[in-house]
Length: 163
Image (cartoon, rainbow, N blue to C red; front, side):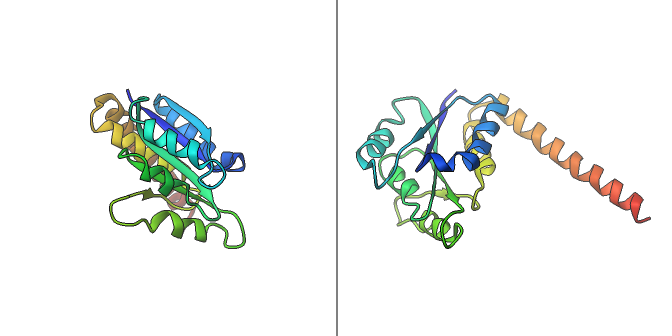
């Protein structure tokens, strides 16, 4: 199975990124976690993205706040799917990161999840891997069923309360 790279612009992003780590672990998807800055370690970030495919990665998650150039910088160096997580921080509380992550030029796509949407970033990568992996697809189906059952149980409780 291909592994997923999780790149953070700063270790301060870890509390958000941990949700992606936990989701990948829950599904048994191998991953690596790194800190590279598009601005402070551009050579290392570029090298990582250039080598990602040959190093066994199937997709890359890139999380950054503020200027949030990381996902685009990573995507510029690889043709692997890149999923950006805009991190809530700074004066604009993540809106700047959202715009910087989602507004990529034609030819360098970055899939972007919600601000602090690390769990969905991991699930999107898992879905990509599940295109070729039936066991992952089954796990995704099971999670969807469990999530649905949880909502229906809450609905039954509310209906009972207000009947």
